[in-house]
Length: 234
Image (tube, rainbow, N blue to C red):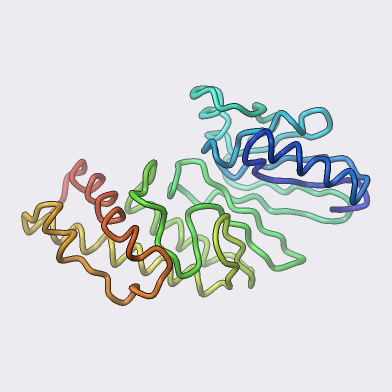
C-alpha cells in the first residue's frame, strides 16, 4: 500500500479477490492500481477481473499467452514483459524478474528492494517438498532457475505457500531438486523401473521436511515422467 494506491498480486479466485478488494477499500481507502500475476496457473491467476475497473494487469508475456490460449478465468494482462520490469507507485518500487522455466514456463519473482524481500510463488518453498508430481514443470531448467534466484539481492523469502524463509532456503531447495533429479537420471540409466526408483530413492536427508511422506514418491514420479521423455547422453 502506498499513498497513491495499492499493488496486489495473485487474486486466487473471484471470491477471494472480491474479499480482498473490499478489505483494501475498508482499511486503506486506496484504489488498486496494479495487479501483478506471478504465473498463469488457475489457482493463482483466477479472479483478476475483479480489479480491472481500477488496476493495470501486468504479467510475463507467456502468462498472457497461456491465459488467452487456455481460457483462464481472469483479466487478460494489459502490460507484459520478457525478462525484467520495474513497477513504481507512490515512492515504492517492485522489480519483476523472469528467472526461466521451473514450475511453469512463465513464473516470475517479485523483488521488493526496500524491504529486501523476494516473493517467489510455487517453485520455491521452505523445508517442504515440491507439490505432488510436479505437473507442468521443466527439468533441469528448474535447478538453473533457482540458481538465478540465489544471485538476486534479498534477505527475506516469501513463498506462495508455506512458511516464510530467508535467502539460504533457496539454496537448500535447489539442492533437493539436484539430489532428486540426479538420482532419477542415474536410476533411469541403470534401467530401473519407476517402482524400483520409488523404493530405492529415499532422499533421507530431507525426511524431516514438510510433506516428505506424502510427496516423495510423487516427486520421483514427476521427474521420471520428464526424464524418460528426453534423450539421456552417456
